[in-house]
Image: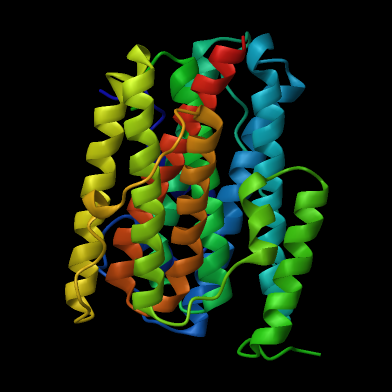
Length: 174
Length: 168
């Protein structure tokens, strides 16, 4: 069994909390092969991606506020929560440009652990792995060029975060 | 007023401003590049650029292998990844009925075994992948190239970690 918090569960929880499009959820869970290429699909993907960023920001925020990140790695967690805030803000801006309002942040389940350690890092790694897999699955479904460009720049950030946590946990990084 | 989302100037300006704000806050290195993103005009132009940048990475990796014994394990894996990516780009070229791409073996030149320069070369390649995604207009191609782009991001991060370790 994977040591990671189940990726599918993370995505489902984030999207259900945010009342994200059922079509996007079905696509991410592999129950539909493709989404229609339309403005509506882009908007649904944007809201789903923002929900995932809210989930990541909430999880990192909880870990940092409760000093659950090991001391030597705290700077990375601060950097990464900032990156997720940047991803959120960029996608909120794309929606605002279309005259629309993004989904509001939802309540994120607190981290179960009470002390800093590998279990917390595994949770943060799971957040990154889930975000990367969701963006990679959705990116081919994006219709508008500027959102596609933004999504490309976002997903490479997620890969960087994931690699750093894997290294910290002593997992294979390449 | 609702803006026209198909109007490229407005959309790009807004995105650039957003990315600049993000960059000013120092929160995301990758998003900072969004503000100056290059527009490719054709899949061929994008694929040619990716081939050229990937060949430059390969040359730098080759130099590293000769100069640093500690690179013996990592470099062959990196070169294998770049070769897989090249095969993907060749598939994409066939899909668009384009001529074959650059043979990386034809690229000759002297480069230093420098981790910082290798990191920059991988960064250039990763950014070119991201910037090229809009030009293909094909969801399968975008998905395949995005996977390779993410792997380049991983390679770049491994070099980052190596650089930090050497500095320590």
